[in-house]
Length: 77
Image 1 (tube, rainbow, N blue to C red):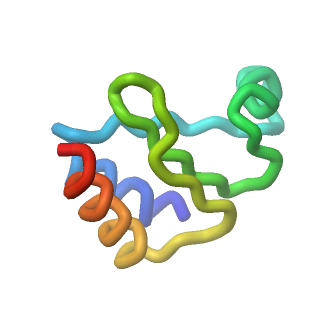
Image 2: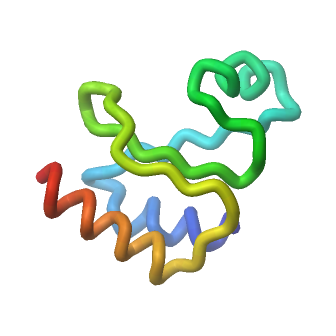
Image 3: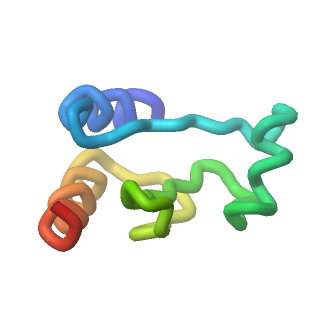
């Protein structure tokens, strides 16, 4: 998954901030209940006001991640 996320992060760097959390580490364990994630990978997209726009539990391929980014940009430019 890292190469997929790295690629999307590079392509959308002017519009996207990627925060990676590991639920095996203290910060990840603290934030998991706040954002409702238990499994990895879990992808959660938020808008600039902190509203959740999209969530996916499980792996994603590059095309699905790009498709999701385009959909979000269309509804939240």
